[in-house]
Length: 412
Ligand SMILES: [Zn+2]
Ligand SMILES: [Zn+2]
Image (cartoon, rainbow, N blue to C red; front, side, top):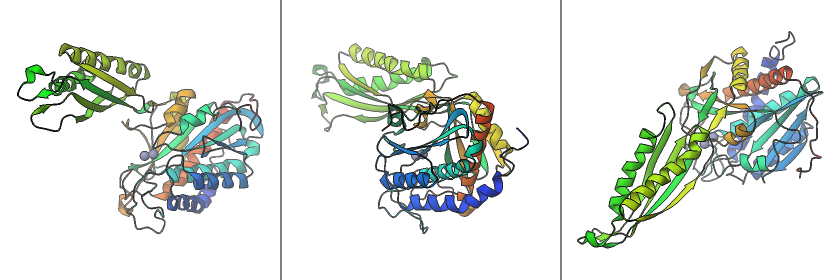
């Protein structure tokens, strides 16, 4: 790092911004909006960016993109924040609790927006010295059905082309002051399988005249376990759980069919692509062995979230240097899904976890709980890390970049 490192004087400025970050977060927390309905949130973000003189574009309905063009040419790094809430009635008694019945920021996306906006303000103040550009992506509907993919389709990674991406998730199982980073896979792909076993209904007392789909489904559930236990390298992770079985209504009627539904979690992209074929092969074999037929539907959910090794090391390094970070740990792998994964499929990047747990203050309820709340003092740390990573990334990867924001063919 050069002697005039931006890290040396960032602390007091970020601390000064704490009030503003908290205010923004609480404002959004009071007014939560569900996926693709983040109208007020998008307007708040747009207005804030515009007030800083940052050009703003709207993508995928409620998505917002802002671009800080640095004073010197260079690469473009993207900071991503999701902005949607959950269909949940808040049970906290704080004065900033949700004012919208049955809608709540119970995952912390309000904090993500506030932190990214604070970062935009910090970086905008010093844009003349930036060697490259910083793009801010505020995306809708992370919880469902996913806003990253449509924003990519509408060009968020173009004009100028994004070279790297970073994002964070506040994390309530991690104490405040800690940051968890992991190169490689960090969150799972979450896919969905639906199977209908079609037999022949009949009298429960005359099963020989029927083709009993219940017995076949029982064999099938057992046989499917061999996909994870016998067909996948034990050093790879796959979970296949049949979580729902529906058939029949009476004690003496063999139903004509059985419906099964399950979730399939995996990390490796190549393996993930093979799983539907392997599962269907077993479904086909088992049903045909018993003289039945089947219907098979497989829906790919969010892909696995895979961090780039070099960018992860960069984030790790920057976090280690900050005095406000007590400890940087290697993150555990989560079997949850994240649509940041679509961005990381396109460009190298790092998605990391920012500790927001503080049991003494009661901030230790899990994500998606009606009592979820965070220790907000963590949020400036997130902004500091973003700022440091941007500087370090742009300073070490200077390249000529063509700026074409707002005038590109794919612009609105
Ligand atoms: Zn969530
Ligand atoms: Zn979340």
